[in-house]
Length: 85
Length: 373
Image (cartoon, rainbow over all chains, first blue to last red; front, side, top):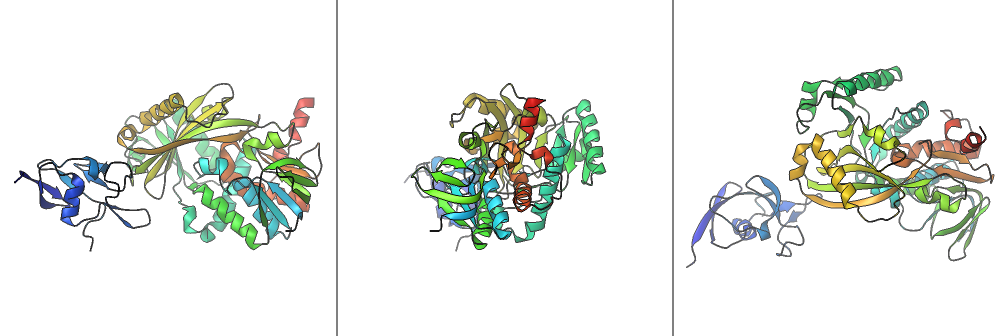
Protein backbone atom coordinates (compact mmCIF):
# COMPACT_ATOMS: atom_id res chain seq x y z
CA UNK A 1 0.00 0.00 0.00
CA UNK A 2 1.28 3.48 -0.80
CA UNK A 3 1.80 5.90 2.01
CA UNK A 4 -1.22 8.10 2.79
CA UNK A 5 -1.11 11.79 3.58
CA UNK A 6 -3.70 14.07 5.07
CA UNK A 7 -4.74 17.44 3.66
CA UNK A 8 -7.60 19.87 4.30
CA UNK A 9 -10.16 20.51 1.56
CA UNK A 10 -12.59 23.25 2.55
CA UNK A 11 -11.76 22.55 6.16
CA UNK A 12 -12.34 18.80 5.98
CA UNK A 13 -9.55 16.25 6.39
CA UNK A 14 -9.05 14.12 3.30
CA UNK A 15 -6.66 11.16 3.13
CA UNK A 16 -4.97 10.72 -0.25
CA UNK A 17 -2.18 8.44 -1.49
CA UNK A 18 1.23 10.09 -1.62
CA UNK A 19 1.79 11.39 -5.16
CA UNK A 20 -1.85 12.35 -5.69
CA UNK A 21 -2.56 15.76 -7.18
CA UNK A 22 -4.77 18.31 -5.46
CA UNK A 23 -7.34 17.66 -8.20
CA UNK A 24 -7.61 14.09 -6.91
CA UNK A 25 -8.13 15.30 -3.35
CA UNK A 26 -10.85 17.76 -4.45
CA UNK A 27 -12.57 14.95 -6.35
CA UNK A 28 -12.32 12.61 -3.37
CA UNK A 29 -13.82 15.34 -1.21
CA UNK A 30 -16.76 15.50 -3.61
CA UNK A 31 -16.26 19.21 -4.21
CA UNK A 32 -16.07 21.22 -7.43
CA UNK A 33 -12.97 23.28 -8.09
CA UNK A 34 -14.62 26.62 -8.77
CA UNK A 35 -17.61 28.36 -10.33
CA UNK A 36 -17.52 30.24 -13.61
CA UNK A 37 -18.50 33.89 -13.96
CA UNK A 38 -22.00 32.74 -14.90
CA UNK A 39 -22.19 30.46 -11.85
CA UNK A 40 -21.51 27.08 -13.45
CA UNK A 41 -19.61 24.42 -11.54
CA UNK A 42 -16.15 23.72 -13.00
CA UNK A 43 -13.68 20.94 -12.40
CA UNK A 44 -10.80 19.01 -13.89
CA UNK A 45 -11.05 18.88 -17.69
CA UNK A 46 -7.70 18.43 -19.40
CA UNK A 47 -5.78 17.22 -16.39
CA UNK A 48 -2.53 18.54 -17.83
CA UNK A 49 -2.39 22.21 -16.92
CA UNK A 50 -3.69 23.70 -20.13
CA UNK A 51 -7.37 24.48 -19.65
CA UNK A 52 -7.23 26.27 -16.26
CA UNK A 53 -10.66 24.87 -15.38
CA UNK A 54 -9.47 23.23 -12.14
CA UNK A 55 -8.17 26.30 -10.33
CA UNK A 56 -8.41 26.34 -6.52
CA UNK A 57 -6.81 28.22 -3.66
CA UNK A 58 -3.83 26.35 -2.15
CA UNK A 59 -2.28 27.57 1.09
CA UNK A 60 -3.73 31.03 0.48
CA UNK A 61 -2.61 31.32 -3.15
CA UNK A 62 -5.61 31.75 -5.41
CA UNK A 63 -6.00 30.35 -8.94
CA UNK A 64 -3.60 27.41 -8.61
CA UNK A 65 -4.17 24.62 -11.14
CA UNK A 66 -5.07 21.68 -8.91
CA UNK A 67 -4.08 19.13 -11.56
CA UNK A 68 -0.49 20.40 -11.50
CA UNK A 69 0.17 20.43 -7.75
CA UNK A 70 0.93 17.36 -5.66
CA UNK A 71 -0.68 17.04 -2.26
CA UNK A 72 1.63 17.70 0.68
CA UNK A 73 0.95 16.93 4.36
CA UNK A 74 -1.07 19.68 6.01
CA UNK A 75 -1.90 21.47 2.78
CA UNK A 76 -5.00 23.68 2.91
CA UNK A 77 -7.18 23.77 -0.18
CA UNK A 78 -10.20 26.02 -0.65
CA UNK A 79 -12.41 25.60 -3.68
CA UNK A 80 -14.64 28.22 -5.25
CA UNK A 81 -17.80 26.51 -4.14
CA UNK A 82 -17.81 23.37 -2.11
CA UNK A 83 -20.52 20.78 -1.53
CA UNK A 84 -21.54 19.90 -5.07
CA UNK A 85 -24.55 17.64 -5.06
CA UNK B 1 -31.29 44.56 -50.36
CA UNK B 2 -31.92 48.26 -50.41
CA UNK B 3 -28.73 50.03 -51.40
CA UNK B 4 -29.80 53.64 -50.98
CA UNK B 5 -29.87 55.14 -47.52
CA UNK B 6 -30.19 58.52 -45.86
CA UNK B 7 -26.97 57.80 -43.95
CA UNK B 8 -24.19 55.26 -44.54
CA UNK B 9 -21.64 54.89 -41.73
CA UNK B 10 -18.21 53.36 -42.33
CA UNK B 11 -17.06 51.66 -39.13
CA UNK B 12 -19.03 49.68 -36.53
CA UNK B 13 -17.03 50.51 -33.44
CA UNK B 14 -18.83 52.05 -30.51
CA UNK B 15 -18.84 55.48 -32.19
CA UNK B 16 -20.26 54.17 -35.48
CA UNK B 17 -22.83 52.03 -33.67
CA UNK B 18 -23.92 54.95 -31.48
CA UNK B 19 -24.21 57.17 -34.58
CA UNK B 20 -26.27 54.48 -36.34
CA UNK B 21 -28.67 54.28 -33.40
CA UNK B 22 -29.02 58.04 -33.09
CA UNK B 23 -29.62 58.50 -36.83
CA UNK B 24 -32.11 55.62 -37.06
CA UNK B 25 -34.02 56.81 -34.01
CA UNK B 26 -34.24 60.27 -35.62
CA UNK B 27 -36.11 58.62 -38.50
CA UNK B 28 -33.29 58.31 -41.03
CA UNK B 29 -32.66 55.14 -43.03
CA UNK B 30 -29.22 53.94 -41.99
CA UNK B 31 -26.57 51.51 -43.22
CA UNK B 32 -23.73 50.58 -40.87
CA UNK B 33 -20.77 49.06 -42.70
CA UNK B 34 -18.36 46.96 -40.66
CA UNK B 35 -15.51 44.78 -41.95
CA UNK B 36 -15.22 42.51 -38.93
CA UNK B 37 -17.51 42.52 -35.87
CA UNK B 38 -19.60 45.34 -34.49
CA UNK B 39 -17.81 46.49 -31.35
CA UNK B 40 -14.45 45.02 -32.39
CA UNK B 41 -11.33 47.06 -33.13
CA UNK B 42 -10.32 49.70 -30.61
CA UNK B 43 -13.75 49.35 -28.94
CA UNK B 44 -12.94 45.79 -27.89
CA UNK B 45 -9.32 46.60 -27.07
CA UNK B 46 -10.01 49.46 -24.67
CA UNK B 47 -10.99 49.56 -21.01
CA UNK B 48 -14.43 51.11 -21.02
CA UNK B 49 -14.01 53.98 -18.57
CA UNK B 50 -16.83 56.55 -18.59
CA UNK B 51 -14.79 59.48 -17.34
CA UNK B 52 -15.12 63.24 -17.16
CA UNK B 53 -11.85 64.86 -18.24
CA UNK B 54 -10.59 68.36 -17.50
CA UNK B 55 -7.62 68.73 -19.79
CA UNK B 56 -9.46 71.41 -21.80
CA UNK B 57 -12.85 73.12 -21.60
CA UNK B 58 -13.88 71.43 -24.84
CA UNK B 59 -12.85 68.00 -23.58
CA UNK B 60 -14.70 68.64 -20.34
CA UNK B 61 -17.86 69.77 -22.14
CA UNK B 62 -17.93 66.70 -24.39
CA UNK B 63 -17.12 64.12 -21.71
CA UNK B 64 -19.50 65.67 -19.18
CA UNK B 65 -22.36 65.83 -21.70
CA UNK B 66 -21.69 62.28 -22.79
CA UNK B 67 -21.54 60.96 -19.24
CA UNK B 68 -25.00 62.43 -18.70
CA UNK B 69 -26.23 60.60 -21.83
CA UNK B 70 -24.80 57.33 -20.45
CA UNK B 71 -26.60 57.98 -17.16
CA UNK B 72 -29.87 58.60 -19.01
CA UNK B 73 -29.75 55.12 -20.58
CA UNK B 74 -28.14 53.30 -17.65
CA UNK B 75 -31.42 51.68 -16.55
CA UNK B 76 -31.97 50.12 -19.97
CA UNK B 77 -28.42 48.80 -20.53
CA UNK B 78 -28.45 44.98 -20.57
CA UNK B 79 -26.41 43.11 -17.92
CA UNK B 80 -23.80 42.18 -20.56
CA UNK B 81 -22.69 45.85 -20.62
CA UNK B 82 -21.50 45.38 -17.00
CA UNK B 83 -22.14 49.00 -16.13
CA UNK B 84 -20.62 49.68 -12.71
CA UNK B 85 -20.59 53.02 -10.87
CA UNK B 86 -17.03 52.56 -9.61
CA UNK B 87 -16.01 56.23 -9.63
CA UNK B 88 -12.47 57.25 -10.49
CA UNK B 89 -9.66 57.97 -8.05
CA UNK B 90 -6.95 60.21 -9.46
CA UNK B 91 -3.98 59.15 -7.37
CA UNK B 92 -1.58 61.79 -6.06
CA UNK B 93 1.91 60.55 -5.26
CA UNK B 94 3.25 63.64 -3.49
CA UNK B 95 2.39 67.14 -2.26
CA UNK B 96 2.80 68.69 -5.69
CA UNK B 97 0.22 66.31 -7.02
CA UNK B 98 -2.04 67.04 -4.03
CA UNK B 99 -1.99 70.69 -5.15
CA UNK B 100 -3.24 69.40 -8.49
CA UNK B 101 -5.95 67.43 -6.67
CA UNK B 102 -7.10 70.66 -5.05
CA UNK B 103 -7.15 72.46 -8.40
CA UNK B 104 -9.03 69.63 -10.04
CA UNK B 105 -11.53 69.53 -7.19
CA UNK B 106 -12.26 73.25 -7.58
CA UNK B 107 -12.51 72.93 -11.37
CA UNK B 108 -15.05 70.13 -11.10
CA UNK B 109 -16.99 71.74 -8.22
CA UNK B 110 -17.43 74.92 -10.29
CA UNK B 111 -18.97 72.81 -13.05
CA UNK B 112 -21.28 70.65 -10.97
CA UNK B 113 -19.18 67.47 -10.89
CA UNK B 114 -19.17 65.78 -7.48
CA UNK B 115 -15.74 64.92 -6.12
CA UNK B 116 -14.15 64.16 -2.77
CA UNK B 117 -10.58 64.89 -1.76
CA UNK B 118 -8.96 61.85 -0.15
CA UNK B 119 -6.10 62.32 2.28
CA UNK B 120 -3.52 59.66 3.03
CA UNK B 121 -5.80 57.97 5.55
CA UNK B 122 -9.05 57.98 3.57
CA UNK B 123 -7.15 56.82 0.50
CA UNK B 124 -5.91 53.83 2.45
CA UNK B 125 -9.46 53.01 3.51
CA UNK B 126 -10.77 53.38 -0.02
CA UNK B 127 -8.04 51.28 -1.64
CA UNK B 128 -6.04 49.18 0.86
CA UNK B 129 -3.81 47.68 -1.83
CA UNK B 130 -2.32 51.00 -2.91
CA UNK B 131 1.21 51.41 -1.59
CA UNK B 132 1.95 53.28 1.60
CA UNK B 133 3.21 56.82 1.35
CA UNK B 134 0.94 58.13 -1.36
CA UNK B 135 -0.22 61.68 -0.64
CA UNK B 136 -3.91 61.15 -1.44
CA UNK B 137 -6.24 61.52 -4.36
CA UNK B 138 -9.43 62.83 -5.86
CA UNK B 139 -12.49 60.61 -6.01
CA UNK B 140 -14.77 61.53 -8.90
CA UNK B 141 -18.05 59.95 -7.89
CA UNK B 142 -20.07 59.73 -11.09
CA UNK B 143 -17.45 58.09 -13.29
CA UNK B 144 -18.24 54.51 -14.21
CA UNK B 145 -16.99 51.50 -16.14
CA UNK B 146 -18.70 49.48 -18.88
CA UNK B 147 -17.80 46.55 -21.11
CA UNK B 148 -17.43 48.33 -24.46
CA UNK B 149 -17.97 45.54 -27.04
CA UNK B 150 -21.36 44.73 -25.52
CA UNK B 151 -22.22 48.41 -25.25
CA UNK B 152 -21.48 48.80 -28.97
CA UNK B 153 -23.58 45.74 -29.71
CA UNK B 154 -26.42 47.20 -27.67
CA UNK B 155 -26.21 50.48 -29.60
CA UNK B 156 -26.29 48.48 -32.83
CA UNK B 157 -29.41 46.64 -31.62
CA UNK B 158 -31.07 49.99 -30.92
CA UNK B 159 -30.21 51.00 -34.48
CA UNK B 160 -31.50 47.72 -35.90
CA UNK B 161 -34.74 47.99 -33.93
CA UNK B 162 -35.20 51.42 -35.51
CA UNK B 163 -34.74 49.95 -38.99
CA UNK B 164 -30.98 50.21 -39.64
CA UNK B 165 -29.17 47.74 -41.94
CA UNK B 166 -25.82 46.13 -41.17
CA UNK B 167 -23.59 45.60 -44.19
CA UNK B 168 -20.64 43.29 -43.73
CA UNK B 169 -17.71 44.36 -45.85
CA UNK B 170 -14.60 46.48 -46.14
CA UNK B 171 -15.07 50.03 -47.33
CA UNK B 172 -12.73 50.63 -50.27
CA UNK B 173 -13.87 54.12 -51.19
CA UNK B 174 -15.80 56.67 -49.17
CA UNK B 175 -17.07 59.92 -50.61
CA UNK B 176 -20.02 62.26 -50.34
CA UNK B 177 -23.09 60.49 -51.65
CA UNK B 178 -21.74 56.97 -51.77
CA UNK B 179 -19.39 54.37 -50.48
CA UNK B 180 -17.97 51.39 -52.28
CA UNK B 181 -17.07 48.05 -50.78
CA UNK B 182 -13.98 46.05 -51.65
CA UNK B 183 -16.16 43.55 -53.53
CA UNK B 184 -17.44 46.35 -55.78
CA UNK B 185 -20.83 46.80 -54.12
CA UNK B 186 -21.94 50.43 -54.19
CA UNK B 187 -24.00 51.92 -51.38
CA UNK B 188 -25.65 55.27 -52.11
CA UNK B 189 -26.46 57.60 -49.25
CA UNK B 190 -27.48 61.21 -48.75
CA UNK B 191 -24.84 61.50 -46.04
CA UNK B 192 -21.78 59.31 -45.52
CA UNK B 193 -19.93 59.13 -42.21
CA UNK B 194 -16.32 58.18 -41.63
CA UNK B 195 -16.32 56.45 -38.23
CA UNK B 196 -13.31 54.27 -39.01
CA UNK B 197 -11.36 55.23 -35.89
CA UNK B 198 -7.60 54.94 -36.32
CA UNK B 199 -8.12 53.96 -39.97
CA UNK B 200 -10.09 57.13 -40.80
CA UNK B 201 -7.18 58.76 -42.64
CA UNK B 202 -6.97 55.79 -44.99
CA UNK B 203 -10.56 56.42 -46.11
CA UNK B 204 -10.44 60.20 -46.22
CA UNK B 205 -7.21 61.74 -47.46
CA UNK B 206 -6.11 64.75 -45.45
CA UNK B 207 -7.73 63.80 -42.14
CA UNK B 208 -5.11 64.26 -39.44
CA UNK B 209 -5.44 61.01 -37.53
CA UNK B 210 -2.51 58.95 -36.34
CA UNK B 211 -2.65 55.45 -34.95
CA UNK B 212 -1.64 55.44 -31.31
CA UNK B 213 -0.92 51.97 -30.06
CA UNK B 214 -1.92 50.89 -26.57
CA UNK B 215 -1.41 47.77 -24.47
CA UNK B 216 -3.73 46.24 -21.91
CA UNK B 217 -3.50 43.21 -19.71
CA UNK B 218 -6.20 41.35 -17.77
CA UNK B 219 -5.78 39.30 -14.61
CA UNK B 220 -7.64 36.38 -13.19
CA UNK B 221 -10.47 37.12 -10.73
CA UNK B 222 -9.40 38.86 -7.52
CA UNK B 223 -12.59 40.43 -6.16
CA UNK B 224 -12.10 43.57 -4.07
CA UNK B 225 -8.38 43.90 -4.85
CA UNK B 226 -9.28 47.28 -6.37
CA UNK B 227 -12.64 49.03 -5.96
CA UNK B 228 -12.44 52.17 -8.11
CA UNK B 229 -10.91 52.95 -11.45
CA UNK B 230 -7.45 54.11 -10.40
CA UNK B 231 -5.49 56.55 -12.53
CA UNK B 232 -2.29 58.34 -11.65
CA UNK B 233 -2.47 62.13 -11.80
CA UNK B 234 0.50 62.07 -14.10
CA UNK B 235 -1.72 60.30 -16.66
CA UNK B 236 -2.25 63.40 -18.77
CA UNK B 237 1.49 63.81 -19.12
CA UNK B 238 1.48 60.42 -20.80
CA UNK B 239 -1.68 61.04 -22.80
CA UNK B 240 -0.42 64.37 -24.10
CA UNK B 241 3.16 63.49 -24.74
CA UNK B 242 3.35 63.57 -28.52
CA UNK B 243 6.94 62.64 -29.04
CA UNK B 244 7.83 59.49 -27.17
CA UNK B 245 6.48 56.16 -25.98
CA UNK B 246 4.88 56.49 -22.58
CA UNK B 247 3.20 54.44 -19.88
CA UNK B 248 0.88 55.47 -17.06
CA UNK B 249 -0.76 53.73 -14.12
CA UNK B 250 -4.41 53.04 -14.94
CA UNK B 251 -6.21 50.05 -13.39
CA UNK B 252 -9.86 49.11 -13.66
CA UNK B 253 -11.87 46.62 -11.60
CA UNK B 254 -14.27 44.49 -13.64
CA UNK B 255 -17.54 43.10 -12.32
CA UNK B 256 -16.00 39.60 -12.46
CA UNK B 257 -13.27 40.60 -10.02
CA UNK B 258 -10.74 40.76 -12.81
CA UNK B 259 -8.41 43.74 -13.18
CA UNK B 260 -7.63 45.51 -16.42
CA UNK B 261 -4.14 46.98 -16.23
CA UNK B 262 -2.94 49.79 -18.50
CA UNK B 263 -1.82 51.93 -20.09
CA UNK B 264 0.70 52.63 -22.83
CA UNK B 265 0.89 55.05 -25.74
CA UNK B 266 3.06 54.67 -28.83
CA UNK B 267 3.10 56.41 -32.19
CA UNK B 268 4.67 55.01 -35.32
CA UNK B 269 4.23 51.39 -34.30
CA UNK B 270 1.60 49.72 -36.42
CA UNK B 271 2.39 46.16 -35.39
CA UNK B 272 -0.46 44.50 -33.52
CA UNK B 273 1.92 42.32 -31.54
CA UNK B 274 2.57 42.87 -27.86
CA UNK B 275 5.77 44.82 -27.22
CA UNK B 276 7.25 43.12 -24.16
CA UNK B 277 9.48 46.03 -23.23
CA UNK B 278 6.46 48.36 -23.10
CA UNK B 279 4.44 45.73 -21.23
CA UNK B 280 7.22 45.46 -18.67
CA UNK B 281 7.36 49.24 -18.19
CA UNK B 282 3.57 49.34 -17.86
CA UNK B 283 3.55 46.60 -15.23
CA UNK B 284 6.43 48.15 -13.31
CA UNK B 285 4.43 51.38 -13.21
CA UNK B 286 1.35 49.49 -11.98
CA UNK B 287 3.43 47.67 -9.33
CA UNK B 288 4.83 50.96 -8.10
CA UNK B 289 1.28 51.95 -7.09
CA UNK B 290 -0.20 48.50 -6.33
CA UNK B 291 2.72 46.33 -5.14
CA UNK B 292 0.48 43.26 -4.79
CA UNK B 293 -0.13 43.15 -8.53
CA UNK B 294 3.09 41.20 -8.87
CA UNK B 295 1.50 38.18 -7.18
CA UNK B 296 -1.63 38.06 -9.35
CA UNK B 297 -1.92 35.87 -12.40
CA UNK B 298 -2.42 37.48 -15.75
CA UNK B 299 -4.63 35.78 -18.31
CA UNK B 300 -3.99 37.76 -21.45
CA UNK B 301 -2.42 40.89 -22.90
CA UNK B 302 -3.22 42.58 -26.20
CA UNK B 303 -2.94 45.81 -28.14
CA UNK B 304 -5.22 48.25 -29.93
CA UNK B 305 -4.99 51.48 -31.87
CA UNK B 306 -6.42 54.79 -30.71
CA UNK B 307 -7.34 57.42 -33.28
CA UNK B 308 -5.26 60.42 -32.24
CA UNK B 309 -5.69 63.99 -33.51
CA UNK B 310 -3.03 66.73 -33.17
CA UNK B 311 -5.09 68.73 -30.64
CA UNK B 312 -6.45 65.67 -28.73
CA UNK B 313 -10.08 66.56 -29.57
CA UNK B 314 -12.25 64.35 -31.79
CA UNK B 315 -13.47 65.26 -35.27
CA UNK B 316 -17.28 65.50 -35.37
CA UNK B 317 -18.96 67.18 -38.32
CA UNK B 318 -18.74 67.79 -42.06
CA UNK B 319 -15.46 67.33 -43.88
CA UNK B 320 -14.85 70.74 -45.50
CA UNK B 321 -13.36 69.30 -48.66
CA UNK B 322 -16.37 67.12 -49.39
CA UNK B 323 -19.77 68.37 -48.18
CA UNK B 324 -22.05 65.40 -47.52
CA UNK B 325 -19.19 63.44 -45.98
CA UNK B 326 -19.09 63.69 -42.20
CA UNK B 327 -16.40 62.60 -39.74
CA UNK B 328 -16.97 60.93 -36.36
CA UNK B 329 -13.49 59.84 -35.34
CA UNK B 330 -10.34 60.98 -33.54
CA UNK B 331 -11.50 60.10 -30.02
CA UNK B 332 -8.07 58.82 -28.87
CA UNK B 333 -8.64 57.22 -25.46
CA UNK B 334 -12.11 58.65 -24.91
CA UNK B 335 -14.23 56.99 -27.56
CA UNK B 336 -16.26 54.91 -25.14
CA UNK B 337 -17.07 57.90 -22.94
CA UNK B 338 -17.83 60.28 -25.81
CA UNK B 339 -19.56 57.89 -28.23
CA UNK B 340 -23.04 58.98 -27.19
CA UNK B 341 -22.27 62.70 -27.31
CA UNK B 342 -20.57 62.25 -30.67
CA UNK B 343 -23.69 60.56 -32.06
CA UNK B 344 -25.91 63.31 -30.71
CA UNK B 345 -23.76 66.14 -32.11
CA UNK B 346 -23.45 64.37 -35.47
CA UNK B 347 -27.20 63.88 -35.86
CA UNK B 348 -27.85 67.46 -34.74
CA UNK B 349 -25.65 68.62 -37.60
CA UNK B 350 -27.14 66.24 -40.18
CA UNK B 351 -30.68 67.20 -39.16
CA UNK B 352 -29.89 70.90 -38.77
CA UNK B 353 -30.86 70.93 -35.10
CA UNK B 354 -29.19 73.04 -32.42
CA UNK B 355 -26.91 71.15 -30.03
CA UNK B 356 -26.82 71.21 -26.24
CA UNK B 357 -23.13 72.06 -26.22
CA UNK B 358 -21.03 74.20 -28.56
CA UNK B 359 -19.94 72.09 -31.54
CA UNK B 360 -17.17 74.36 -32.83
CA UNK B 361 -14.26 72.78 -30.92
CA UNK B 362 -14.92 69.42 -32.62
CA UNK B 363 -15.61 70.56 -36.18
CA UNK B 364 -13.15 69.05 -38.65
CA UNK B 365 -12.84 72.48 -40.29
CA UNK B 366 -10.72 73.66 -37.34
CA UNK B 367 -7.64 71.96 -38.69
CA UNK B 368 -7.97 74.03 -41.86
CA UNK B 369 -8.22 77.21 -39.84
CA UNK B 370 -5.10 76.26 -37.91
CA UNK B 371 -3.10 75.62 -41.03
CA UNK B 372 -3.98 79.08 -42.36
CA UNK B 373 -3.44 80.87 -39.06
